Image (cartoon, rainbow, N blue to C red):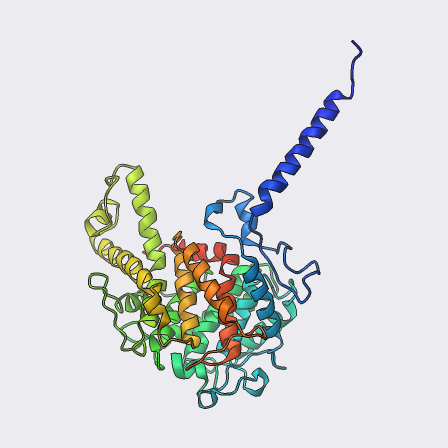
Length: 450
């Protein structure tokens, strides 16, 4: 029989083709990070992977569980594109974005209001979550200008101040608290520092600004862990300040652990896990604001408890069917006082997250203000930080709710209290795109507290 010298090559080539075709089909439902650009046909628009994308690590075996990730529905992608196209047009000449004053909630023109740090920080975080950096992405230029605006605001802050702006009476300050600007700017800077890395030319400047903001938050902290300058729903200001300290710590900022513990304990105290009762005195009487805040600021500790219990069960120190309580947590390795504290956080998280997603609680006033959008955001981020598979159900329900109420021009606006279309659109975009940021949020939940 005549030899066929090319047969091995043919077989190898055929195998490669089969593997590639199989991979293509297997990957048909693989979620990808998306960066909606101004033109869906351009290389930077939907379908193009982004630098630092969360899904990069999912499929390179770096430890992120692919079962925790969801694909973005087409309806959400379309909603994101319309929202970001509207949002970037709202940027002012100074690089900032504004929500407007409490006295003129009727003004919907984003260029007819003064810029403020809180709104600019929310837009900046939305731009980053959509895959932009100050150098890369379809909206890198807008993000860089917003970054420069915020850095300048922090750098010109007088010594002894508790906020980074002289502006007063904004919608966000009146409803959340007089020092909300520094809390949200801290979160923006934490996100920025984590994304750009130490080699970036702006890193040291951003890190200094982050430490300045951390100091401002800690200086404005009351003895009970809340933040000075309560607004109508001051619990939200204190909640964002607590989560800002948490995210700043994960970014390597100089955070005082006692201040962080005090801030988080204040949030947990607003919810009684045994009775299900909610303290709403500083939440404008609205259960949603209080329970979303309690959920957000107990999520990291609840995740730590779950991971510690799982390890203890594998090592045989805790029974396989053991329930979480203070005694069991001592068996898992916590000192008695710490076991009591962690058990409280665990019970608060699991009880509060149920109420935060209850339809009767979500309905609130029957319509949404900026505070509702913020509460939805807190709940969703909490579930991801806690590595809670329940985030998928929350994501499906909440994104559908937002897509259904989006304005024709791509924006959202509030119907009471915080009515600003810029602020509400930025917050809604952060919610819709939360699955772009899973890796970053999980990293925050991995921070261990002594």
